[in-house]
Amino acid sequence: MTRVWERSSKKCRLPQEFSDLLPQGLQHEHLCFQNQPFLVPGSCNALSGSAIEQEYGDEKIYIHGINLFGRDCGYGEPAVGIRLSAHKAWLESVLLPHLKSESLVYIDPDLELGDECEYADGTKGICEAKQSCPAIHTRLQYKQQISFCSNGTVVCCSSKATNPRMMAIEKELNECEERYRHLRTDQYNERSHTVEIGWQDDRNTTYECFGYLISTRGIVSSASCLSKRGDLPNIVRLGGNDSLDNSRVITIDRVIIHPNYNKKTLEHNIAIVRLETALDPTKNAFPTCLWQNLTHSPKGQIVMDFASGSTRLVNPMYKSDCEALLNRTFEGHYMLCMNSGWRMFYPKTDQSDLQVHFEANEDSSYDNYFEAGSPIVSKPYLVHVYSHGSCNLNTPCVVARIAAYIEWFKEVLQ
Image 1 (cartoon, rainbow, N blue to C red):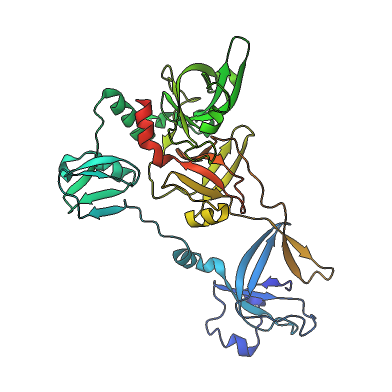
Image 2: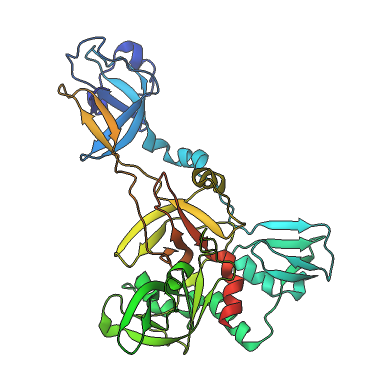
């Protein structure tokens, strides 16, 4: 690797054999560069397509372009490369995934009007005429799967809540964005949804778990944390993560551990804490919105560990990659693997300062063991709940997918 310097178009004096290749001269996409004039010929070989890198600070290295033509190694002549930033739009069009914005549509030719049906997220329904199913509009709004029965006029209509309490919690979850919009000020942060879950007796009070408000009476947390003691928690403290002056304590009505929670494998490591009295939402404590799309996840997800005050950007992994790394399988859509997706490399320069190579820091795959139940968010949505794992490239963290538990939330919170 050889150190080079960029040259402006006015100072880019190419030999005739190369300047003839650019009848219109250097364009915006071209990058002219040159090394030291007296570099010994043969000390390097400028390969077509090789990377032209740029260093920012001591740690960050970016590819600036790729070599196009010229013989800059030992001849005192500039060479020309392609500036990658000039082709950013094209690179994104071929490299980035194109996620469809519309809902996933599925047609089941074996179902007919009046038949029972079920969605991949566990939602049960009845095949009804499309115009008779207002619930289909909610699924469209959240870009959830839409199933047609036999043809395009009959849909799998999710079962309607019949009792008032079930209808109320369903409405609260679905109307979250608008209902609490006025509380999301410029100073708003995810701590407004965070609660501390604790144990109180005649002698002392301890808070050992964290949870996340999903309704005025509901908190989601991890089953492993809530069940780690012989008795279940009995109080929560809300609104006190920034200042205890704004905190309030509410008694727990019931702790509901997911019925399929496995203490050994930590499958379905999720639980609901139901409050004895409904919360009066304020800017310091109000419910988050739930990500209800089972097939697509938002960009820029952050795991928030309120126990340590740290946050970390995490990315979802392919199920097959995660199962291969952990040597296990996962059930359905309920669990997902994530990791940080990056490693730190450090440049190593020799004494002549003409060659640079990079070495991975052995400690660059940081272990990120968060508190079980830590939320994984993408404003203003709660997308996942952290269960276990280090979240590095070698050992991903395992999380519970919120969208897969929506129907269960409605059942236990009614």
